Image 1: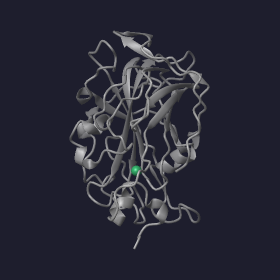
Image 2 (image 1 turned 90 degrees about the horizontal axis):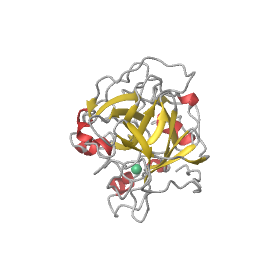
Image 3 (image 1 turned 60 degrees about the horizontal axis):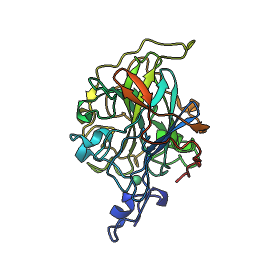
Length: 319
Ligand SMILES: [Cu+2]
């Protein structure tokens, strides 16, 4: 009666396949924190009873099940930065050419799919991205996790469909993904939109699960000596124009043997230099970072909260 291996019966799939009992309390995922050069900055935990740092750099959202945004919301602002996504008060300072280590709060093995990253500049604001209008943000893709579909191996856990995906690279790196800030990116305030798409239910129209995480950044010039490539945002697209419900990478049966996979959304910008699979690593938080607030064209220390320097950030569990 269960057509799929049991480990794929995670999250809402379990409910839909069984159809008999109410949705179990299950872990989807959310943004735990980010690490930049060892410094940790808080994300946002949407689950009930979780407290969130005032100095967080992760946007808030109204998704108490740490769930997803589906294709029904592709034409609404919800697809930008998750359900009722609202800007974080603080920004994480980062240099062009640095890597941002995005730590998910676990990721289910049975949620295969691509891992994507976009940047949007916050323009015409006096506080950077702290009160930016998400419907005005124009997104340029800087990472498409290519090859998002890695394929089927001869033996082992990836030997039958859906095979191995970028999401498994993420899981094997402690449920995290490294995002390269383009070395030639112009300094200023940006929102990083990091997104995993789970395709285990994407055979059905409307069944893909998008998990967009938005993070405020204050980008500074590249460190002296950094090899920089000329980079410019490609103009970008509003979030409501990123995807269509029938995109070949959104409406897809990953339990058929695939030969190819077309990542949805725009192609990545020239000279974006995403971190390749083989270079994806875990990262260790060394100390608390000092989030900043943006004042016009500069920053000031963020004082409305305390960055929890002494907090320990345990490894996430593979789920
Ligand atoms: Cu899920």
